[in-house]
Structure formats: C-alpha cells, structure tokens
Image 1 (tube, rainbow, N blue to C red):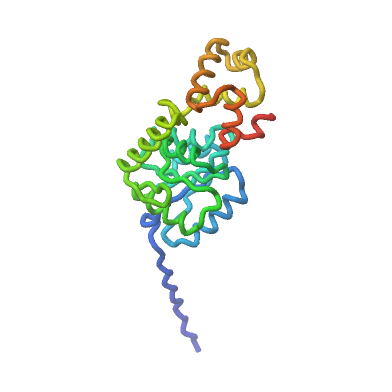
Image 2 (image 1 turned 90 degrees about the horizontal axis):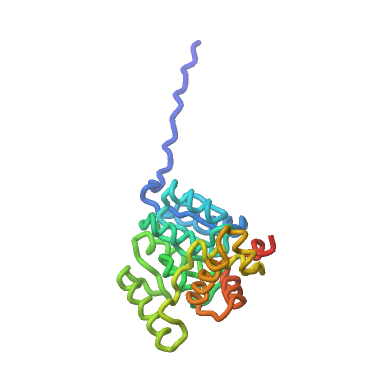
Length: 248
C-alpha cells in the first residue's frame, strides 16, 4: 500500500523593519569592551542598526566613506588621528554624516571644540542610554543636541557665536577661540608632548626650525595658553593625544 507523501509547509518568516527604515550607526572607539557594551545597548532599539565599528581614526574615515552611516558615535582619544580631527575631516567631505562625540575627557571647552569641529552632539561616556538614543535620532534628522536642547543648524551657529563672544568679552579667550589645529600643528603638539625640542621636531618632520616656531606660535594662540608645557597639558587633559603615543 502506497503511502501518501506529506507536503512540507514552509514557515512564514517573521517580518522585521526593513534595514532602510532604520537609522544606521557606526561606533568608533579603541576599546573593544566599550564598543561591545555600546553595541548591546543600541541593538535593543528596533529602529537602529549597527553598520560597522572602527578602532582608530583612519579606519573610521575609511569605513565611513565606504559604508556611509547616518550617525557615528565618536571617541576623542583614538590612535593616530583623534576624534575631533576625524570629525572635522568627515564634515568637510561628507556633511550628511552626523557625528556624536562620546568622551571620557569631559569639560565645557571640549564640548565647544567638538561642536566647532562639526559634531551634532557631545556627551560624556556615562551618558544615560535613553538620552543617547534620542540624540542619535535627532542627529539623523539633521538636528543638534546642546545641553539637552535640540537646535537646528542656524541656531547652533548662533549659540556658538554667543559663547565665543562671551569668552572674548571676559578675556578668557581671544578672537582665535577654539580654532581647530591643523594636521601639522597636531603633529608638532604630539612631538612637544613627548618632550622634543624645536630642533628635534624640525629634523623629524623635515621642516625648518623657524617653521616649527611659527606653528608653535599658532598653537599657543589657538589654545590660549602661554607656553609649550601648558599646550601639552591642555591636549593630554582632553584626550587629543594618547599617552601611549607620547611614550612610544
């Protein structure tokens, strides 16, 4: 007696939100444990998707250009290029990518540096996850989050201008307040932080001692400090230069 073959019924797959409807996020941090923790938190959100991760500045630039995430969560203290340099580079070339700076080196001046570099928001690393998720959605829509306030581009520009004018009027900072350091200036600042003399820096970078002096004058003016020691301390306190790079 022939047995009737049973037809196998295919299970209907569970529908999930299309990837195109989710906000695509990239995490940039040199600590694997922090990246993993942040990923776990964000993966609980149904409307977010982790596009990729990066552990240093150059890798972040390369992957951002390839993957084109909507929002990047950016550490400041990175190997090679620091997070503010990466943010500035990204905003110069891919303005549609929003950057949220997350840092362990938190102070008001760091926030101003981050916003001037083009960041859409700035938080210390102990930020409440719900607050961060809200900021990610706002940044993806082209908004800025400053001290819990959601601002548009013209508003944040006015806010920054007011901050700079207040500092200039009180003598805290001059007209060069929070101007970004150039790539060469950051190279020289790193050399200074490791204790190198102008002669040593000139030889290492293949430039004249006078050029080093000119860059040094610009660095002191932009950071509003009096000497190279203060400049080094300023950079280290804000995580622009890694201690590992100083001692290497």
